[in-house]
Amino acid sequence: MFSRIKQFLPGSSRSLHTMHEEITQMHKELAQMRKEFERLYDRIEIADHGINGNIDFKFEERVLPKMKQLSDNLQAHDSHMKMFAWEQFRNNGETLVDAKKRFFSTLPKATGGLRLLQIGCAKLLQEFDGICEQSGIPYWLDYGTLLGAVRHKGFIPWDDDVDLGMMREDIDRLVKAIGNDERYHITTVYDKYACCKQIRFAYSDTDIPCFLDLFIYDWMPYSSPDKLAKQQEIRKCLLDKFKKDTLFDFWDNEPYLSSNDARSSLIADAFDRCVTEAKDDDIICESNRASAIIWGVDNVASGQQRWWSCARKDIFPLEKLEFEGIQLNAPHNYDSILKSQYGTYLDLPKDIHTHFQHVDHALLNTPETEEALKALSHDYPGLHRQGRQADAHP
Image 1 (spheres, rainbow, N blue to C red):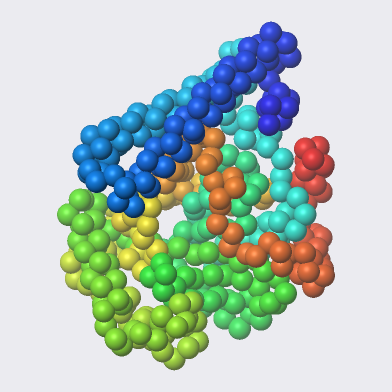
Image 2 (image 1 turned 120 degrees about the horizontal axis):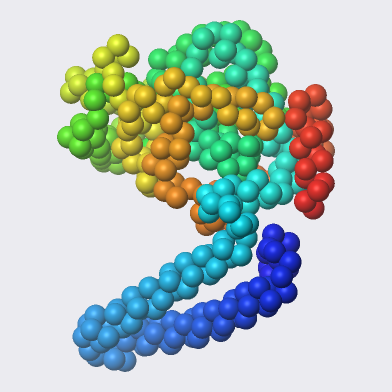
């Protein structure tokens, strides 16, 4: 790990030696903390098995404070290590923000099947952009795709999907714009686990595993805590209905139910009633009355983005950002949007090894998939330039 960090640092042997000693000392202290955690867990397990009769007193009065102290120390050490590394990486006269942007711009691209998948998705995104441009349908880069455009000018190296935001009525217009075009299809799947309507734009060729996720947004007259709480209550009632009403028991057996299944109409109707209720309560409205935009009630609702809304001017008018060599739509105030989604989004990410895989990466190495992706990406405009960048960072 140190050798990989070293390539980004100044050539001073003294500064490198100092950093190495600091990291070594931190490693020793973290190892000691890990041993202390293990000892505490052993004590808790012994008490939990009834060997120690006064667990409540010892756990709450002695163990919990100690664990909190250790957790605080770990977080402090983590912050100190990052601070030290960034200071070593930053050039003279360079701001910390510019140093972080420079760092992310130097990260190597993905390789192998994952990179082929990314280029295939970028090609699909380029064609999607052309359809929307021709039909006057607005969309914007969202979530990890927006983060990748700002931070990497393309895919996050370990990402494997594309996230786009669209207004509800524009998704309906997109379906009509595609019409009978046999090259593409739009699928709707009802996800039991996330209780959401999953909409994807993809190639009709099933050998090409590329797709674009389309997230639904609604117009909002204005944003307020009361309106956001009311939408949360609408969705909570819907989740309770899905859980308790035996009418939806079939969904347990097929948690990813296609809209082509006749039974999906029951789920679709339930979501539609939520949208109608939100309209009746003046949570959502028509475009001509809107000063805000709200996350659709039929989207997944979890994590930091739960019941999210923003000012209309944060999204529109749309900006252009570079993504894998092409110019694509992005929110007008993309910095504010990213901060609302990720906080300090230029910090080192935590999901390098834990990012959810939307596509089985093992399947990317099958001859059929590899051939389809290579054929798809052969004429992609930024492929050769990106290939040279990837070669420069093996």
